[in-house]
Image (cartoon, rainbow, N blue to C red):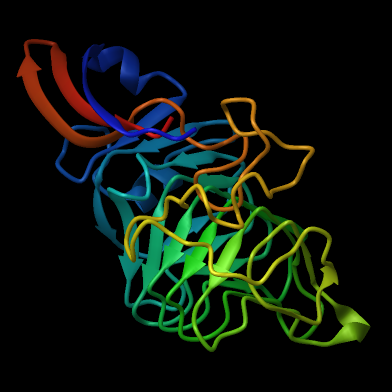
Amino acid sequence: MKKNFTLLVLMLIAFSSVCHSNTIIVSINGGGQFEHIQNAIDNSKTGDTIKVWPGTYTEQININKNILLEGSGYENTIITSGENPSVIISMGTIKWFMISSYGGDGILMSGGEVKNCVINGCSGSGIYGGNSGGDGIVRNCVIANFGGTGIISNNGSGCYITITNCISITSGKTGYYGYCGYACIKLSVSYSDGSTQNVNGGQGCINSDPIFISSNDFHISQGSPCWDSGNPALQDPDGSLSDMGYFGGPDCPIYPVVYEIITTPNGDNINIEAKGRANY
C-alpha cells in the first residue's frame, strides 16, 4: 500500500509572483521569502499557506492565526529548540513536521490542529493542553521518545483536545493522560495506539507495539496492529481504511515529500530543482 521511490522535480518560479501570492516560502538556505518560520508567521494573514522547505529550524514558534503551516515531511523538516515548548498553537493548522524540544514539551496547545506530524525526542511531554483556549484537534500524529506524557491535558479549565488515529508510545510512559481527573476530562481519544488514563472516548483504541520500520523511520510494517485500524470514517489517500500514525488519514502526503532543494538565480526568476520521495 505504501511505497517509497525517488524522483526529480523541476520548477521555474517567478520571484515576483511568489511574493504577491497567498503562499509564503520559508527556506533556511535563503531560497524563499524568509529563513525563519516565525518571521513568516508574523508576516502572514488569515488564509495564507506557509510552506517550509527542508532543514532544521532551531526556534520557538507561535501559531496564533488561521493559517496552514506545512512542512516538507517529518523526515527532513524539523522544528527543535531548548525552549519549553518548541511550538505554541492556538489557531490554524500545522502538518508534516518533526517537532522536538530538549528544553521541555514539544507543543503547547490551546486550539488549532496538529495533523500528520511526528513529535519525537521531547524532554517533557509531546503535547500539553494549554490553560485556556477552545478546542484542539490532533490527528494521525506519532508521539515518541518523550520524557513526560505523550499528550496531557492541563489541570484545570483549558483546551479540550480531540485525538484520532495517533500513536503515542514510549516504554514506561503514559500515552494519553487527562491530568485533572474525571471531573474535568480534557482529552477525547479514539482509534489510537498507546496507554490511556482519565480520558473520554476509547473507541477503537489499542495499546500495542506499532511495529515501526526502525527507531527513526515511522512507517508501520504491514503486520502492525495500527494498519487499517484508524477511524473507519476516514480513508488513506489510496482509498483503503485509514492507518494510525503519520502515514495514514486523508492528510498523509501522497505527492513527493521534498528532501533536497537547489536554487539558482536566473535573472528575475529563480530556478528551483527539488528532489522528493513519495510515500504511496
